[in-house]
Image (cartoon, rainbow, N blue to C red):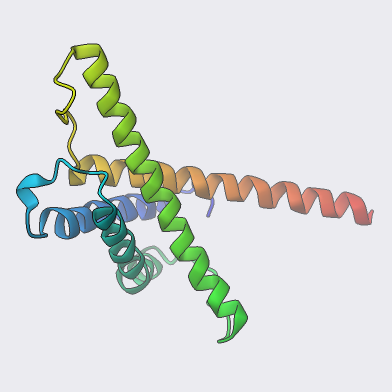
Length: 162
């Protein structure tokens, strides 16, 4: 996914919006939403990962494919390739959510340290807008990184052959 094209930026914006919507419905919509300040709970992180994976497969990828005519890698045939395909989507979302939770943690520690808030306070609680922005940033950075790696692999293999 090359992010230089305008339609890819729009697709990334749709992904970020969808991640914010997932955060809104999965995190804020759960029981005990008034205690959402505990953004580091394992059940919240796990729930976000599961809902993000399902939303990605069922909603986001088909919408992006239809709206922006972006060719996505086709799913492999059932078997080992399909299992690896599914695992790659799950691992992608695990990494992105862990990066987001780490970012929230660093931002909160920074705010507590610099602004002298109470140690147990959470100055920046989990909320959909920042979650969506961070998801878009990390997804875009990952897509750019994968594009750079593939480009260097292609250049390296062509030099090896020639």
